Length: 156
Length: 397
Image (cartoon, rainbow over all chains, first blue to last red):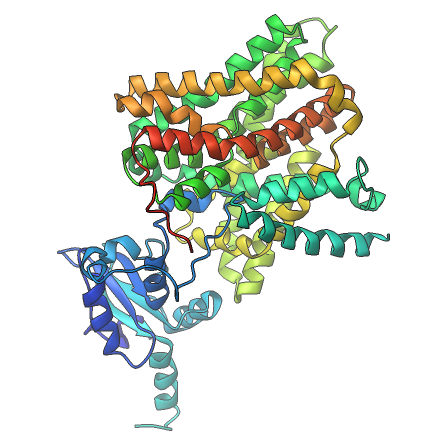
């Protein structure tokens, strides 16, 4: 069975310019830790935002390029003490904090492969893309587990 | 003290001394080095001999890991993102220090060519830790800051290439000083060492990519990546190729052929801090205090002309790429610190050239400590001059 047969096609997405304030409102609607894809106008997937990235707001922006640099001291921020003003909610946007390197799954991938990758990378959810890298859905570990239970007849 | 007790002692004292020095806003690297000097044979002699003897082993592993990580910079889309100024400035400041220090050592200090070349090559490295720390501390923002961050991030990639070439030339000169066809041999050996490293890195990257499909867990991913990095280091040592270049090429090729290569690099981050700590403490412990007194002029020349070379190189790079006036003038001042890559290169030189190795290494470690202490002040001055620091708005977190 392929991912596209099981994935959810209704996905809440945001744009690069979505503000922090709006992101927090969107996150509030979820019951779990959400993973929200960031897409361009044509649905091209460019990033993902999770609650971990929200914490990055409190840190000084670190350019992508510094990730390859050895011996950098981790910046420690005390999120309980940091100065943060109300207008930052409108100034910080998804593009500032989103993850640019992440795992995606192709819509024609098999469920076995997807499950294996989820276990390898300790992720519960992957964005699903087509050949051109456009977002077509999301697949979660629960979708796969539920599918197996359904196959075994435990649920209808 | 037995070996295991020694290791435990190094890890714990290293951890807490880094915390301590962080309070006065110096990078952890400085703490590890000073700790190494203090507990090493030169001062309190608390590190067991076996551990000190393992310095070569640990430094080869650490350098392999560093070079592998630096290879990530060569991702196809990276250079487009980095921009023209950063590339010009970083290439020219690295070459500036290389050429300047080599010439000063050769002409003014009258040192042999192979030795001057080694000092020159080591001087091209820059350590970003102190610079990044100052930028974060003062919340500096702007064009100057962005260019500086880009330059310190990519600089070590050029240093590895420069050192790879220089080491191959120096080794060839050293080994064949009396041989016939001298120049041909020097040329041939250098080409062999560099292209061999490229081919080795390429083959290992392809093998790694092919076998990665069998991985199932995060732990396997770490073991797999570390295993391949060690394999690559080992084969490079065995075939007498450049360890640094072989691993940099492994990282560089991997990042371009594997879709989610970032996972391999990230997985190493769980162990690299521990290895870096050991590496720096042992580097400090290897300081030969007896040589320190004799260094005088060599140390001073290195200290001064490395910075001048970097400033001139950065200035020319900024001019060519049409960067702003403050970048032309002050960017070089943000490139003062040296640390891991310079020490690693010096350790390789120490192993390969036993007669002069102690002198090279002690010079580099002494200058590293000085640079790490004055580097932050220079960076702060440069940022202030560029008008990208808002004094008084410093956050105390």
